[in-house]
Length: 136
Image (cartoon, rainbow, N blue to C red; front, side, top):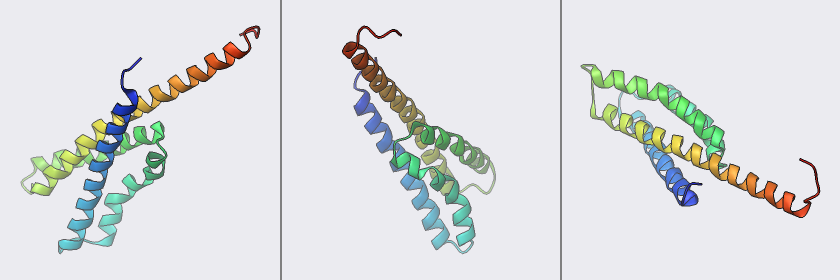
């Protein structure tokens, strides 16, 4: 049993959402302020992240897992950008947000799964205690 699981899950959600919001804000600000920014580019950058937002709000561990898979695309792209001669500071901040969000989402997904398992086990044990003669 993991100690302080609810607290860890809340911190994981907070860290994930903070990095999520920061990355979306960076995409929005850059597309509004740069001459090369466009609505099409903004949609292409933000849409993959926004697809899992309803599940993240609902605290679905599957949505957090999918967010991790989606973040692998961003991670790969930003590592390549950082290695290129066209590197800018925004690439480094986006990579940082991506790494922090990946770690937070991965841990939050596992902690939510543990909480769901503990609840299911408690319900099973309660049902078993109410009807001890029932065959398993």
